[in-house]
Image 1 (cartoon, one colour):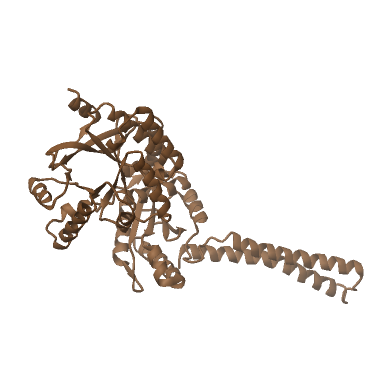
Image 2: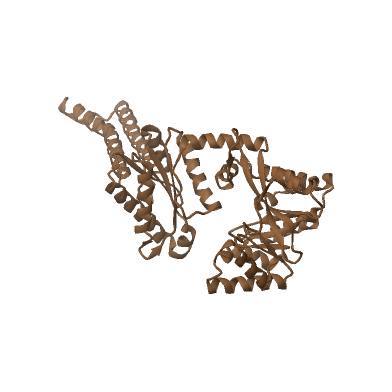
Length: 474
């Protein structure tokens, strides 16, 4: 039995005892007044009034306890694990060594195709199996809760590396439950005596960072206290607009020269160290600072264009959420006008895994951006259905192909798809870019396929801001 179910049973038993007290008192008074006097109590107005008051109080008290039973339940109704509120109280009280979050990544697909009953049964089964799996690792204390949807919270008095291994084993053994295939993601952190809400936010950030840049390698378990410190550093750095730009050369095959650069960004924190986007973007987004971050990027890029030759263009990523914000658009349009920049030198990269729900409105936004002269690029083209859907309804200027196409030249299926995407782009008169070009063989094959631009270590090393300015202003 789950620990949460045991504790809930104990709680309800105590409530039942409390609810029985007024009933026992009422019965006792009736028996007392009857047997102590040797006759039934006379039904006078006074006695009737007192009896009615006592019965009303008893019923009200029992109703109050029943309502309290519902409101203060420890359990999540579907999984019988702890609900979110109770789970947070548990980790605040017991401060377990390690806390983790386990996510069913394809939950929406499962619920759409298997129905509510089967989906709820699946969630209950996952928690039950997870509880059994944890028991096998002999943790001193453990708690399992449900955060929301298909996100499960786990807290254990067990070393974090063992917890990480345990969850990996669980995933391996439970990839299919009741014929339903499940795609999991998880994150683990050391408790570090941080506040429960902070731990929860940090776990969500860790999950979000995996989505930004998935990695096949196991990630090191981080400490909640250090992550809290990182969060403060990120917010401070963004307030100071402390961004480091790195310029990756884009080789124009037809011209035989480098005439564009893709910009990679890192956040510079106190002490001079740098943070990668996968580590700081979840924090930025959670605090609602995405548009502030993108505006700082845009300002700095436009400043750079004034220092570099007119024929050089810059390609950079902006969040679709920022582009769909009217105030953000007005700000970047004003910057272009005030600095009298040739907007054609700016290439905005966009990437979304899912098509925006209001596609026509979003495409109007992109049209406004292009009307100002800026070019628009689909990043990681071919990696999601959204990019193809956008291509059907909007004529983009540039596409950057997903890295897997270059990495999988030896795969016939991948190569055939790649060729067809290149031919389609040519037919639509869209400029094509292949990234992650590491050697001469890849370079030659891409030229033969008709790709317009190449980028990667095989093309040239990236420049810092200072190096780029010196390169074009010797």
